[in-house]
Length: 264
Length: 285
Image 1 (spheres, chains in turn yellow, orange):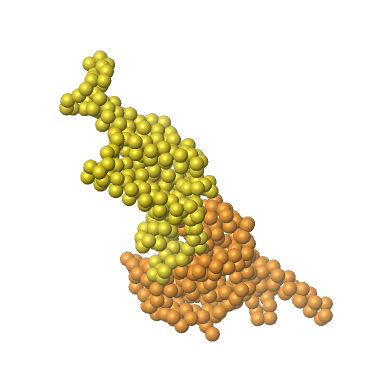
Image 2 (cartoon, helix red, strand yellow):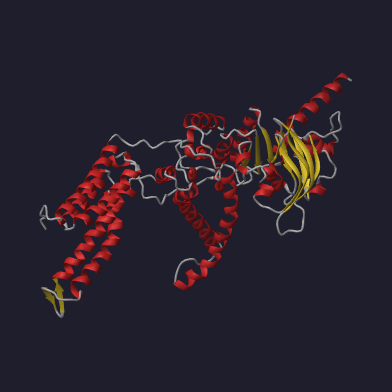
């Protein structure tokens, strides 16, 4: 069955890091460029994330995400470049439209920020097994019920999709038009959706009992079959990230105080 | 010693007028295989869920009488506590998959993780359960990718790793093909050999006849009869209660072949041994 999880096991460097370390990377990658200011830190972190993703063999999985957000980013660039208000320096002209330098620079800032966030989140999401993530969350005091809801979605949604397609096939085999114009599709939707919904209601009761009898609401302390063992690089990475974060804060403070000059 | 004692159990689901269970009393002993039969709506599933206290604690509704398991009144206890004594397996294997685990092995571990069993102990129990149910080769497969019979055995494994003394099964094979249900029955008889008490609601009458030590016949929420398969299936009023006797019982009834106690045989084996002893008797006489 197809899983909707974006995770793939590649036994890579990133797979070996604990979810917390990767989450720390996400925080540092978003915070540090903002703290430091300027564009170079953004470029550095984007390059870093891309290198990490490529190293883990999941770079091509970011394609869709980048393509979708890229489309939005391009519209941002166009609108900001041509229509940003206030005083402006002309870059070039297309007919009546004037490209404005300020607008372009402003949109570039947005693009870098968004790309940085996307890539660093990809580092986390594409290389972390959902159940490991949940396990860590539960260990850190998040309710196991919430953890269950989060993780089970990855399997229950594809299962429901499969179920829906079975019902569609059944309806179609009885001569119902399920494809064609919008009106046909809407007409086909009702007899399709009612068995799906009714079934889920009855299934939910049985499912919840089945979970209950396996200690779903148990108040005893949980244990875990596979304790996630991070690779030896994990703690080193964590320290490096914290050092980097502290260094960037210290650097900014010193710069503001005028002790060092920051090249822009 | 009786493991489960049901005393004048009466139960009505919320917002219904009819009693789903009406004055049921019986005792079930340790290591017994009890088959529960009866027409749809007779109260079989309700009775099986009453043994875990799901009736009334999960469904609510009006409840009278008592069910005690190992001296514990199930109504007074929590499902968490009881499910370590009594395991429950449902008919639809799909609904018993937690959906939060990626492999069969992890899936079976689910209940143990909830009760904080140590990982080494978990592995020991899971390995032995998988071996018992003959699913060791599936341990790295995805839970939803299994066939019905495999999935049902996985669900059963998820229950037996919790080492309950009693396993209640509510039509565990009704959604399986013949091969799948044969797999489940083989697994169940392995459990019986381990000394587990098994209570099974089942429509496959031949299987019930072959595996049960005693059969409970329910109709309209009442316990009509409880006894050996031979005794129950030799009753004259089976059709009134919506139950069809096993094929061999029907044949022997038509032919008037009875054993010494006056009961008709319920399986091929019993029929054959009865006929053989008759023939020997005939030859000797």
